[in-house]
Length: 60
Image (cartoon, rainbow, N blue to C red):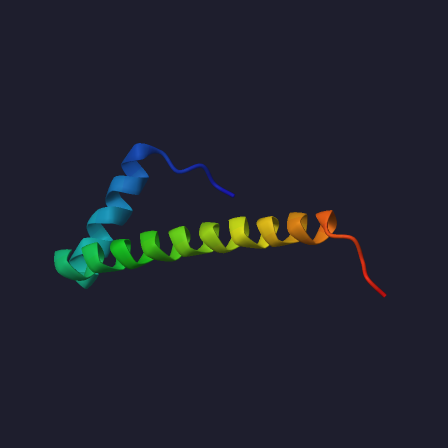
């Protein structure tokens, strides 16, 4: 994978803004941040559920 420096990232950002517009880019950024937050929350809840299952004794 090629290394992207600050100049390349800036050029990509300019192209994205020109293609989609500032409003849409900010909305996409907000939605992406929200999705990442929900993903992390789901991971934490899943890990919490597994530790609770491990602590409870099995009943037959």
